[in-house]
Image (cartoon, rainbow, N blue to C red; front, top):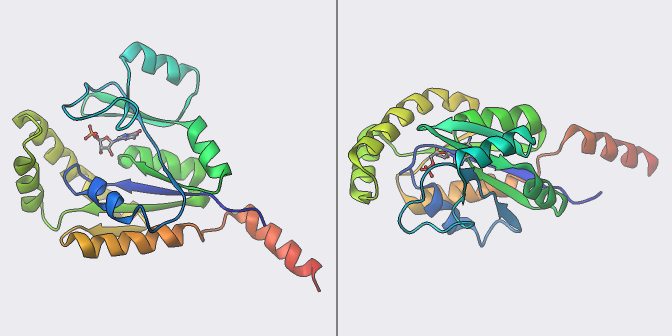
Length: 206
Ligand code: 5GP
């Protein structure tokens, strides 16, 4: 059988440690492609175009929507964020795990379109108090931005049940171990088409 690509969706509040967790597991999960989203939000200090995001203006983003370039897109904190289809398709064809860091709306759209190859994980801090503490300690965002993130986090945790797994990032090493296991298992998720192919081949070899 041909090699499987798989999708791993990571959602959860900014400040939950998604980026640190990906860094910790990246050498242990085989070939993967981290999907670089396109956004209309302003570039932050320390961010690099084409590494963290593709930064575009509203006009360009809307054109991409019209041209159906996005697998999914959403309005988050007043800015557009979207996942381009093309690199995702290529990475899947090469048998890679495609990792998305997207919000709950994006997860919903990906489940609807590619649910049978998608594994999803909600990553969060152990408590709201700890999230507030981490966002304030990070010192990268203005007060209103932090408040917006906290408000969004409070709304998003209500939808944890839509995810396959919940990882509570209390101890980074422990959370990384859990995410590593989930990522490795995500490759073994088999789309129904592949299962039919397997059954057919299994019976052929009698
Ligand atoms: P930030 O501005 O902190 O980088 O991201 C804000 C939120 O947007 C995060 O919850 C992140 O997961 C989400 N996000 C980033 N890229 C995408 C995307 O392509 N699609 C969707 N739906 N959400 C995204």
